[in-house]
Image 1 (cartoon, helix red, strand yellow):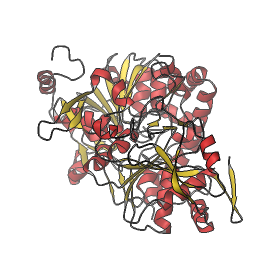
Image 2 (image 1 turned 90 degrees about the vertical axis):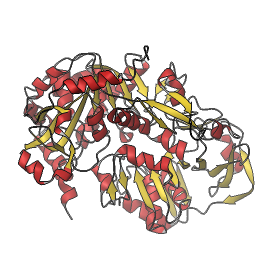
Image 3 (image 1 turned 30 degrees about the horizontal axis):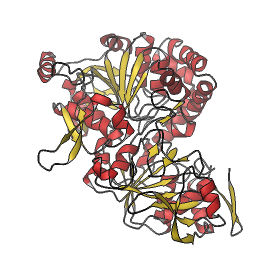
Image 4 (image 1 turned 180 degrees about the horizontal axis):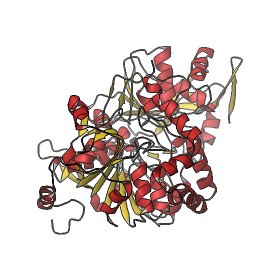
Length: 323
Length: 260
């Protein structure tokens, strides 16, 4: 396995985990402090999916901290990954689908960076992304599966995808390499100071992401007490010892959605699509200046989105609690 | 926008696709549906004649009900979970396909070829593409693991002899090539277009016209296709969308976000 640079060697994975402080300790910090933990060139996996539970606040902090050469992976990538490319923070995207969203057509920012070969868009099937994280979470080097065979998607991956004949049945299977990202950025509805995270609604790949990652940065709509967590431990989805930092970031997915709290900011996303379609380079630059580099703080960013937009997204988001 | 005229009612090509696709579904089926036409078609079937049909969303939802006028923008938002039986992690809902619980996978397509392979990744040379498209999402998984219905507009540039890139495999190179590639289950079952209903020859797996939309000729279908089509011996004429079908669709999508 000397030429393997795809799968973290098992002794290393175990050693790095063992070396971490896994005690029940408080780890609350600011977005800026959490951003300092991440190094240029790290592999950062993004929680949520598409327009949902996107860890926008942490991505915002990474872009403001002028990170470079990150590899980002996500089940489905949207405008947040556009901005990671446009800001120069990331140059490699590993995902199954990458565009702002069907209703806005094909993302011009994604097209610009991938067609001009300024960034790599490495495409795996959606289930394959999930099984790669799951293999990472399970501490095994690969997962067999029955998709991507016979397709261009499989072929394009070259040596990253292997096949084997099943030793039991003789069938041809695809082998997906385990993915253990350096970091997982996950946003949840509530979490305690230790990192015990409870999330509502769709889980996407976040549980596997947390278990697979070498460390997790957890942003949360609100920090709750450990006593509150202990009253409903069946609702806790991610255990504290996977988590390195806890950051309270209200409206932390905006302009995307957080289940039961706010829906996507559709008008804002329409405007984003409009300016980046007209000119992917200038449009994304102006957007980053106004919303990412300009604001003094996260609340200042939310003010820039506008109180009307915040209230509208919250009204729609909370409608799931209505009869 | 194509306007069709029938039964005193006008309807769009997207509405025609929704109605035709809905009619292919059966009560009791488990249907893995993409957003847009597939979701509208599956919901239409549920409301018209298939109350026991279950919709699965890639985002992880089992059996949601769609609130009229609140169609989800993708399969991953909270709108996908309304009145659902269960939410699962994405990987686990996709694994239901591999385990074998799903009857029909249902999606749209950007480009299709004579063997039903779909491309949603690259237009032009994949190594130097004219256009980078968003990619597979769950398309490759769904098409690798279950029987598929694809709904798309019938245009020559979309119906090509060979796709530029196989994102979601159909019958690959025809004959037994799909099974030989390691995909023994599923395959592309039906293609619904605004001109025709198409299937695939049992032996060669080449695309075959099974029925024509009302008022459409064989020549029209062939002229809008970039390869030579097979035609079934007895071509059926399809009943145009009925008023009740269109009324249900328009109640679901009053703003015409997906049916314009």
